[in-house]
Length: 166
Image (cartoon, rainbow, N blue to C red; front, side, top):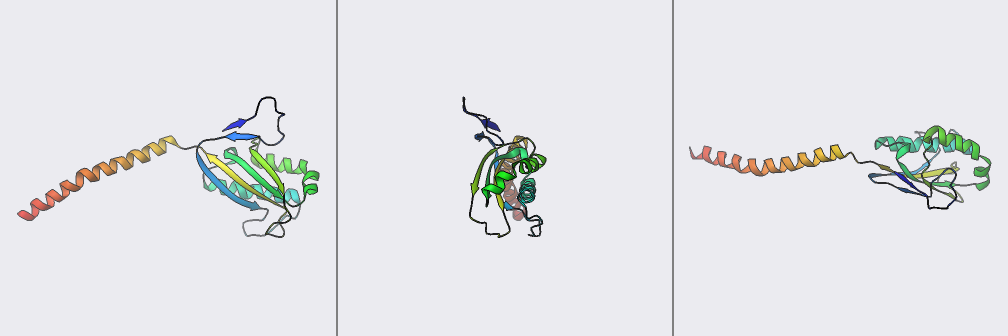
């Protein structure tokens, strides 16, 4: 993954202007601050941010991906002032879970979320590098199986034919 920073632009704080990546895409639906049972344990902004990120990482883990694979995040918040007054806590929660990885990000203020208790929702796109060795073995195995079936099928038919002649 390569961070894209046009020459002369001010360094962004906490995000990247762009990311160049190659591999398998992982799309994570918008995650809100509820737990695995659908219960909101935290009502505050920072608590829900932490849980959104935990949920995001759980989904990424299912694809063999982690924070370092995240290429883009879109944050939907319901209160701009709540966000601005919690930057320090949000930053701490982010770094605790995502480390020093700052992908391309957008922050959008929305009137409400479908889940009434949600104050933040995070949608994520990640790119997991392709395992070239595994892909090569898989494609070689497929080619080998096709060749074997093309060669063996006629031989099996011939053997069956000869056996029926006896």
